[in-house]
Image (cartoon, rainbow, N blue to C red; front, top):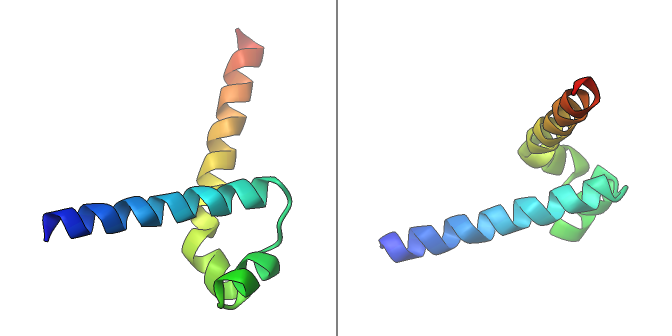
Length: 68
C-alpha cells in the first residue's frame, strides 16, 4: 500500500509541476481546465495557490538579489 501511495503522490506532484509550467508560459485556467476535463474554477481552486506561492517565492528571490 505504501508503494501505491508513494507512486500516486509522485504523479500528483508531476501534474502540479506541469500545470505550473503551463501557467508560467501563459496558459489560461480555462485552457488547463478544458484539457483536464474540469472547469477553470476547479483547476484554479486546486492548483492556483501553488502558482501564487511560486510567484511570491520568485519575487522574494529577485528582491534578495537586487539588495545584495
